[in-house]
Amino acid sequence: MKHMNKVLAVGLLVVAFQNCAPQNTTFTKAEMASQTAPAEEVVPNCFGRTEGTTWWVPSNELLQENGVCQYGGDLAYSYAKEIELICHQGNAVPTGKSQKGNLVATTGACLPATCNGKPQGSTWTIPNGTVSEPQACPSSSVVVNAIYNKNDTYICDNGKENFVKSEKGSYIGLDKSCPAPDLDAAFSSEKVAINTSAGLITAGYNVSNMAYSCSDGQSGVLPVAATSTSIKVSQDLACTVKGTNSAGASVSKTASISVTCGSNEVKSGGKCIVYACKSFVEITSFPVVIPERTDAGVCYYAKLFNKIATGPSSGSRLDFVSARNHASSLGADPKNVAAPYVMGAFTNKVTLQGERSVKLSGSSNALTSILVDNFVLMGSRLASSTAAISNYRAFGSADAAIGTTGKIKVNNADVALQAFESGGTATIGTLLLTSDFSVGKQYELNVNALDCGGSKALSDIYLVFQ
Image (tube, rainbow, N blue to C red):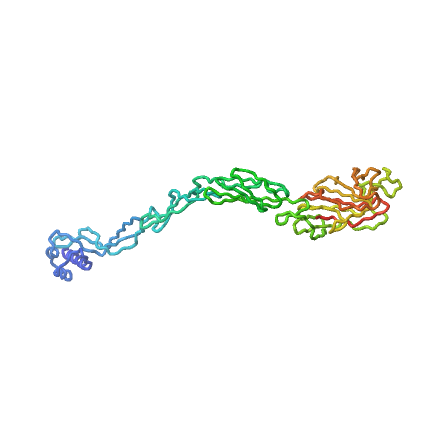
């Protein structure tokens, strides 16, 4: 047993020699020699140590220890494991105790410092009060402040929250309301008839030296208080109102008004001129929509009836019309009536997009008389109406009327006959149909050229839109 203890002691000393560290015990030459050639007999005093003395020597094992990371991580340390020996009866015997020796290795790392959970280098923004910017009120010398939320930006720098910048955030509102504009100017209406007057309504706020000037040369001084000044309107007009505000700057506002031209006028360059047909376009199909007048002077026409030379009466009759029968010898006898012969009949739909003069003429591009033996009957109604046409008018020779009444009958209703001749073929001036139409509505127009018997005659008849 003593021999075994000696071997153990020598082995431990060899390990200690192989793994010596700065804090380990230094062996003498005698001890070193003894470890390489251990004697069988007991070495006195455990290599010079007295009985009961303890000391530490390194072993082949390692001790692991986790590093302390304030912000987390996987830092770890590896240390040499040292064991304690005791000198017992001249032998170096392990006491069973161990301790951490020299640092051998380091693995892993700690996470960098954070700012309340925000990683290193990150930025964030937090609201911090408000910021204001001056803002001029529209058309006014008054300046107000626009209020915005203020946002502060921070950065995480080695665990510290460092301020970076402040920025304007979302808009909140104004610190006070803007006053009314320095000037108000407007016309009393958007449109007026040519050569009438309109009111230029004006008012000033914190201004002086108010005056107006218009595009046609009209001008004048205005009071600051709200007022209406009469302005004559003979063309499209723009009037500018000017004044000086409380800051000494000139302020202005412009009001405009449009003129409505007369019945035979068209607007050119904002001014009304007499409308004249510069060209004629033939209407080849119905229903038709006629464009409004422009200064290009485009007019439209459709040929309704062809010329019929003088000859014996013939053809179909218009049953819902009664007139004097020229084929009878009864003459002006009230009982001498018959349905007239139809020389021409037209019924179709027309829409006007603007004011037009609508006429029946003997020519397409000139206003010439119509020749008819015996009369022209015309009427109209809204195309959407279900009622029969009732506003008939008749034009022709007086001897087409029944008896001495001066009238014919249409659907058993009396219709006055406007006489252009006492008898025979009547020469009728241009017939105006303008009153039969309203702008923007579709109308059904009915025109008939009728013969009372005996003989017939008719000139060309055109429907003209000027």
